[in-house]
Length: 100
Ligand SMILES: [Zn+2]
Image (cartoon, rainbow, N blue to C red; front, side, top):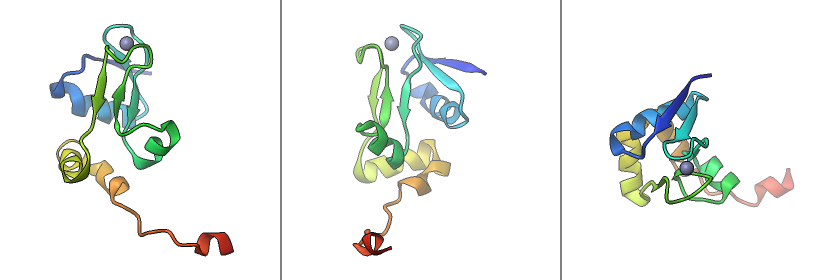
């Protein structure tokens, strides 16, 4: 499996996200730990963090928060348009699910 050491620069941000979505490991440039890259609402729910890139060892190594709201959408259009559809809000859930 390929790995990519990410140094936290915006220049390589898209690359880090792209590789992560392909299942490749993106590693912290300081400690070599696999970075936690949260790039979908499903992962936000799973990890209880907002979208971003985090070093699991020490937040001071890498901690990037993707911007929220319209700026967040702009971010996704720029950096990961293929992921944007996952971020579009689903139609509001109703109580119908409970009845199924
Ligand atoms: Zn680290």
